[in-house]
Structure formats: structure tokens, C-alpha cells
Image (cartoon, rainbow, N blue to C red; front, side, top):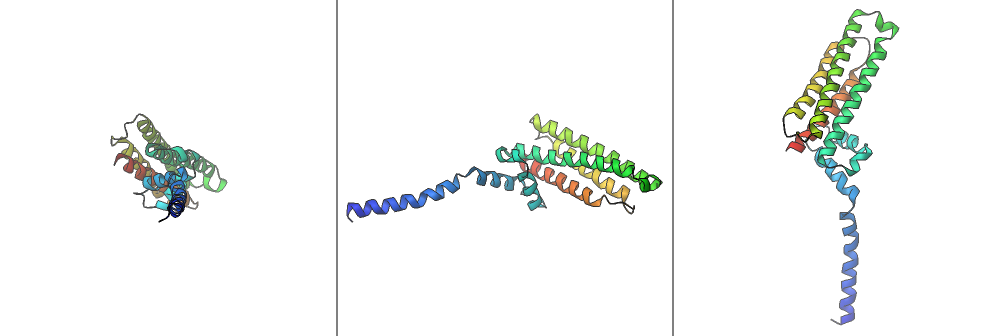
Length: 183
């Protein structure tokens, strides 16, 4: 081969590899891969990935950071649910129904416990003691609290089921990311 032809072929080969290298080094792609890895044990994988990706800090988070984000998302949802339950309890129709009031009281208590359990999980995670079973156990306890709330309001005239299911999904995603973290 002539030297000019060889040079031309090498140039083409080099130029064809450059775009692939740019794609491989794309930080957004590696972040998405890490988020997908963090959600690999979730039964609601798409929801897990989309909820973690919705937090801007996930773009620069490591696996421990993603587990923290997942727990924070569940915690925020639990506190929002407590606010919603308080509004429901003050509703004129519900405030005259003793069974509804008791159900809401139980739910409020359950979500207060769930929020505390998730705070304990975050504290253990930030202290690097996530290899202990505590983080997983606290997240599982928060899920159990939500299921207790669901049972407390079952059959009553107001709707908490959807919000409860969203919290359970978020908490299960948090549990799944912690499971991936602790390997």
C-alpha cells in the first residue's frame, strides 16, 4: 500500500472511533447506568429509575448517595402524607365519623413512625454503618407502617390508598437500593 493510502485509512479509522469514545465517556450515560444498577432489585424498576433521576443531585451521586436520595424521597412522601391526613381529619364530613377519625389517627401515627424510621435510616447511612442490618430494617419497618395505615382506613369513605401505594413503592425502592449498596 502506498503511504498516502495507509495514512488515509488510519485517519478514517481514528475518526470513526472518536464518536464512540465520546459516547462511552458521557457522564450522563454513566449516571443513568448507576441509577439502573441501584434499582436492579426493585420490583418497580422504571418507577425507581425515574424517581431517582428526578432528583438533580442524583447526577453526581455514587451508590450510597442514590440510596440516600431514595430514602429522602420516601421520607418526603411520608411527611406530605401526614399533612394530607391532617387535612382529611379536619374535613367536616370525616370529623363526624368516629371510625374515620380513628383510622386517620392510626394512619397519622403510622406515618409519624415511618418518617422516624426513615430518618434513622438516613442517619445510619450517613455514618457509613449501612452494612448493619439497621438501615434495611428501618426501611422495612416504614413499609410495615404504611401497610398498617392501609388496613386502618380500609373501607372508609375517603381515599388514601393511592398515596399509600406511592409511599410503599418509594420505600420499597429505598429498600432495594440499600440492598444493592450492601451487596
